Amino acid sequence: MFIYDELKSLEIQNRSIKVGLVGAGFMGQGIVEVMESTPGMVVAAIADINIERAAFSFQAVNVTNFKEIKSAGEARSINFSEERVISSNYRVIPEIDCLDFIIEATGVPEIGAEVAYYSIMNGKHIGMMNVETDVTIGYYLNTLAKKTGTVYTVCTGDEPAAIKEIYDFVKTFGFKVVACGKGKNNPLEVSATPLTLEKKAEDSGLNPRMLTEFVDGSKTMVEMSCVANATGLTIDRRNMHGPRTQVDKLTEVFTLKERGGILMNEGVVDYAIGDIAPGVFVVAKHEGALVNKTLQYLKIGEGPNYLFYRPYHLTNIEVPVSVASGYLYKKSSIAASSPPTTEVITIAKKNLEKGENIDYIGGFTVYAGLERYDYAAKEHLLPFGLCEGAKLTATVEKGKPVTYDQVEIKDTFILGLRKLQDRLYG
Image 1 (cartoon, rainbow, N blue to C red):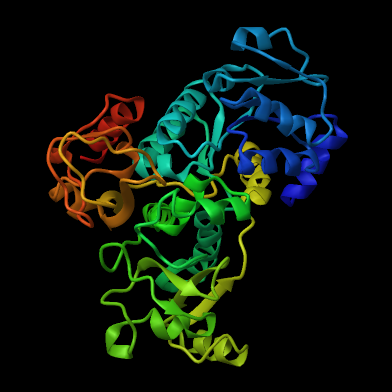
Image 2 (image 1 turned 120 degrees about the vertical axis):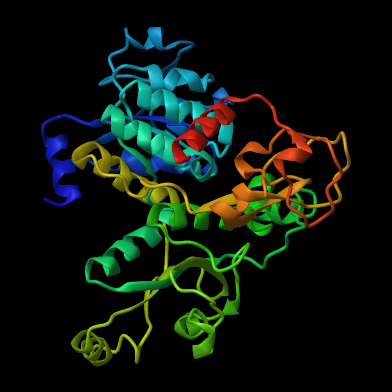
């Protein structure tokens, strides 16, 4: 049966997958709206530090029968078929007994780590829109989920899951992946800050920090690391190539240098700036003579490399697919099931002085880069998901990566899980 058929069957039986949401920003509010029109699924609980935003998420879809709770214990007396809950405490959500699936949508690595870990430990499936957490400790969380019989997944809708769908499709038929990636929505400006983008963010209705993470390239590095770690692919060079090109040139650009392309190696992730966004792509080839002849006949291309391109990704709109796949089939949309191949690293956005604190993702002090996992480990490069609040113990020149030896890291929950992952990897 298709997912829709099964969800419709749940609805007919007056049953539903009960979802808890952490983070009621733009993405979270969109999830609530789309799930109100999805059969067999309902957002039953929302947590956000801004309780008014959590309430608005329900009010915007004409849901008025909700109440605020301070603890999971208060939820035990609630009939969730008639009433829903909101809370300003995100720790409450993984502990609500009746919830089947938790979605983490804050984008804050520390919160993502706590919500994912405690969801798994409480026997609940967890879907991450917080890819920043995933690239830091996703391998550990997925390993833990498998041991407990739950599903850990990065959610459909963002580019990583959209790329993974095409990757799985071509690998099923024996294609070899040359490169896969996404289109970047805007030119790369690694020095961008919430201040320089304040007007643009206001005009776009976006949080300046969120827009900064996109423009300075951090989000692209995070997303492509997620893809690499879930597929076993790697990168061709630090921070990838990111060429300016067009859709109809992707097979010419993402091919080996001896064929006129930019790659030293095949089997890599990358991104492109041009008319590709908001699409995703896989460049792949096949050894079969008849397969190649058929592809040429079907006007897929002349070979030897062929383009498999999806011109869109639907962010929060597609999230119900991951929820249904996890709950109904116990399947993850995308997750690292083997040791990571890449590391998202921390790079100085300006000259950083000894004694200074790194602020936050999408901020004024650092941006994300991407390195091979083994190289990053050898050079002791600081994972991007651990950088927030770290204190500099040495100066770091603008454009240089920050190392573990140059900072004092805050003793956080995500740091503890990262140490466990490092042991697991070792």
